[in-house]
Length: 371
Ligand SMILES: *Cc1c(COP(=O)(O)O)cnc(C)c1O
Image (cartoon, rainbow, N blue to C red; front, side, top):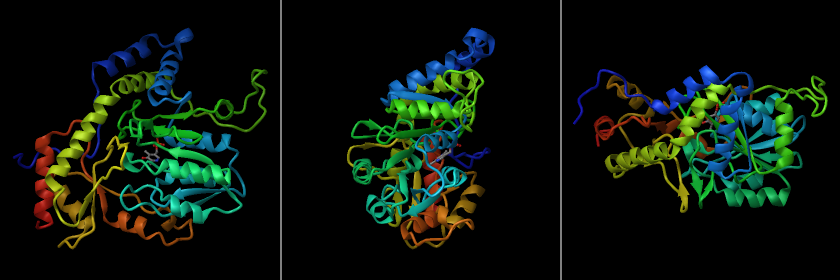
């Protein structure tokens, strides 16, 4: 088995091949004047094709894709948007910035994603949208959520930021609701030069509205005539060049991430009190982050385990906090989100990880938990 490595085994990190380098070099050399947007257009086209969405537009981040989606749905003052409590705070911030209120409900214990039963109880006259999150690449019960949205005439904006390549019954994350949002930040399964995002939809009208907001609200027909306050969250052609190269390799990345998860299951799956990522029937998670939740009796807790693992050159990340515990909100009692947040952690899951490294990591985890 591997002995203690000199360099930290990180939780994430991209794979950059000759393809990425050649596309980016091409964009640097030739992506100007009449070619200034070639890679952007190609990236959007190929992304829509891969996910099966009708329309796709690049953005400077997943968060900003989410903002454009909210703006296009007309979310604003007096509206409520239902989120899982276990979410990433950048997207809930967006809703607040637009003058609306995020409402936090609990998640499913197995998928770590929003619980449809809890959504039903949180709907009020003010509810305008549901925002399911593909936590660490996992799929929520999207068909039940669609039913609820239809019944109550609500938008669905999927925070699929970490879930490129995840599918449920063959359908891609981000294609169930009105909008899907993706991130190409450097730690994600595919990156566009460290930052970037994509917004997808099947709805032409919503798509045009989102793009209009992203054009700073400039009139369709009169150049430089602004008809609405807006935004500009564009991606550069050079970023798109890298994004396109990564997209062309996405199945390779998903396969590797899933393999890493199988290795973790092999070494940790039989320990009482440790839960690993689970998959619903019909789900293919991209396993962006292989993760564990400690819900048994162990001599040390999650935070102590993370410190000890760091000493052994193993980097980890704690699960997100339930968003409602932050001082800007009124805390609500979502016991599953709280339990997961306290006991969950992401393990090294980058596409470069080897079986020997995973074996070493699991050996250390077992040793520290006295298994
Ligand atoms: C990464 C991530 C985001 C943020 O994406 P950015 O591109 O950094 O804006 C939002 N939500 C979830 C669930 C994420 O994993």
